[in-house]
Image 1: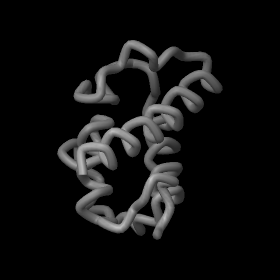
Image 2: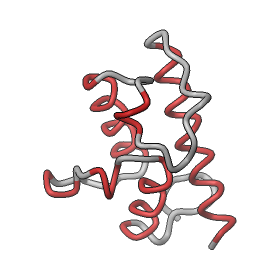
Image 3: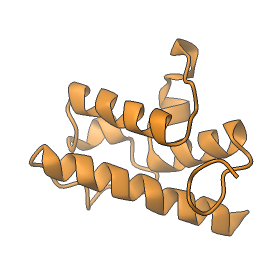
Image 4: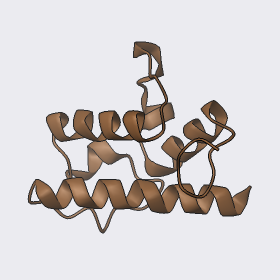
Length: 96
């Protein structure tokens, strides 16, 4: 399970870094537990785009009540939320 979480965090990091870079920002200094909206790496539109990317990649079918800082505010929170929602996620990040 820890290895699965580490792989998931790495995948989320790639998504975050890629989006931030495309928007002209640097997400490198963001730690796994840092609250992404507080980091300044993504503006509100960028944050929404990031959540949509994560939702699509992991087939989460997010509901409005899922959109909380506790669930999606940091990479660590996202990884825990995804693992709870999609316990069959494998190394590729897709459904197994």
